[in-house]
Length: 99
Length: 209
Image 1 (tube, helix red, strand yellow):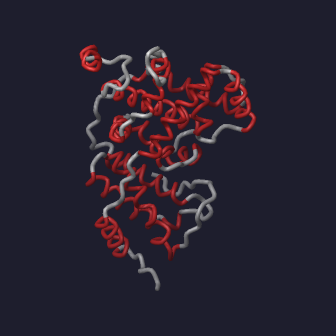
Image 2 (tube, one colour):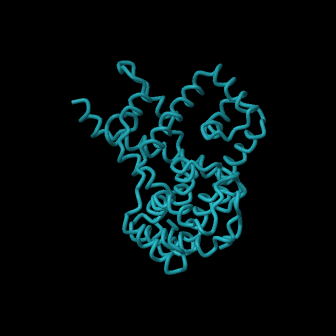
Image 3 (cartoon, one colour):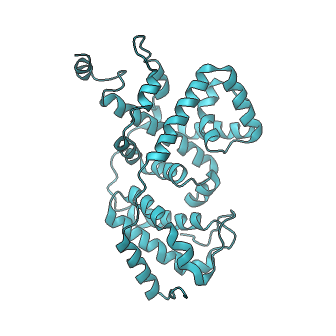
């Protein structure tokens, strides 16, 4: 299954099994998530420095993902929920905050 | 559900007397995630309330020095799986065995008379509502990891602990979830007419006229 294959190749990346164009796609996310070991990260950067098409993919992926992270709506809990939760915690024994 | 399972990461160290102070600041994050998973406010509120009650009840099982926010999310996730996912109508999920390579398709759309690259054109035009809709459209397993990673900024290890799956599974779900997200954003871009590649011919003629 593709799911497992993608995961497996990412694990290879974590362990530093070399870097080529076909691996860059998987590696970009690890790099963006700060989950890539230093050794692999430097291999990754070396490859990008000499491969304009992978660099272009990296730039694109970074930029749309940053937009998603920044612009995804963060909902706030309604105040009524806050009150409801506090009430039910108190009726289950939570003591009021001491002054 | 095994709430006693702990998450071995450094974090806050709340004391029993300060459950309120430790836990309440995470309510917005928990509610946001609950809402996006349950897709409606009523269930999201119930999920959050139940999460807080369980967290309070099992607070002595929480290990000091481990990540409290991740612990709360783990309870939320288990509550969602146990009580809400079952009752949700599961829409037929598409076969994702063949996700197209959206990026390759995008860059193949080089048009000589255009001033900007297709990436620039796309990136400059992503709509807020498309971002929300693309997140919403992800199948729930993928939606969950993407929310935990990109909205809540949990590490892979923390996500693995929250979901109770190996780190490799987190990586592959995140990889596929983000590729689906990218594909959805590009699809919306084509539908809205600011990317031409793959646009229905009817829309293309409207753009040209």
